[in-house]
Amino acid sequence: MYDYTKIPNAWHKSGLIHYTFSHSEHNENDCLNALRDGINVAVVFSTRRGQPLPATHTLGGYSYRVIDGDAHDLRFLDPKGVIVGLRAKGKARTLKTDGFVVQV
Image (tube, rainbow, N blue to C red):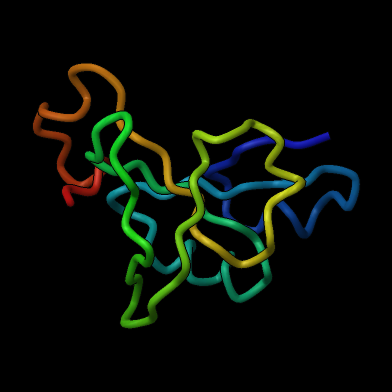
């Protein structure tokens, strides 16, 4: 089983679920902890469909590789400790989001 979560350290509570931690505008330290634990972090970018996502993304002064999370939904197949880049869809690309959608 696999799931997205915004609950910090949820992966410590269950070895049966493959978690991807969800970045928000207020949880950078939790994202860094997840990445240190080998947990991937989903980040929504303003990148348009058909355009490449950034190759890396910096959190807390550290640069992490970005993989294309729109290529498939099987997150358990992804390498560990990377940013899962997602493209904002529709109006989310241009609405003021206070940091949830990372502008590139």
